[in-house]
Length: 335
Image (spheres, one colour):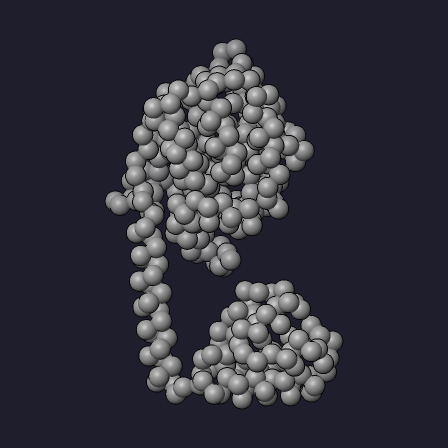
């Protein structure tokens, strides 16, 4: 029998001991939470199975330790009525805390700043962008998008802001997004806008709209007449609502530097976006000269994304809002 289990003296130590062995932190937290409730007893069998499999011991030897857990929890166990009242009170407190936390995240309209933006060759900011690219455990490739969304990709597209009062059309950098965006990308966009706003640069897209969802193929370039050159076998990330284009009329692919400031490039990279002007080894299909294009790099459940949302609470607020929406679409909860 593992000494990690024999030495535990309270609920927290139980959780730490078990999660240390099997790593399923979220699942164990749920079990430990249930241990504190009146309905914890039916979970004994599940705990026996988990511990037996994890520690390589027999069910009988683990059962003795579970009996000790029962006695420990029994010391704090309350009646059904008291338990229900406590849970109701706890739910109300949690709800109030969430509302207070959300109210602390100020949402203000984007306004251009006072500092003159910088426009330089991509070599000037390439190294800093690549540092951001190194963050994250996942990269959302076109194949990943196809597999994840399948033929239901349009269900993930939203055009109205679910957080702002009145649910206005989703905007970015002071411009409405045409076609909407994938609800998973919205938290990243709000983080990017926050970073750019904090830079206080004098920038707003020249065109009246930011280009979002478009049900089309991958654009490999633009002809002299302005018509796109598309790959018939590769869908565009715009098809899944996971990319935005800034001022496409002034930033054609393979037609020079364009006018997107360096500060915007860096902010988008920090906020979890790949730049159409600069890919990495997992994004080699880019021509690397598409300055207007910004594409969601990793999933919002990626540790790098969660760290980003912790750093910029506006991202956390939007993620907590769209997560249940995503769960409803996929009929499962995204942890």
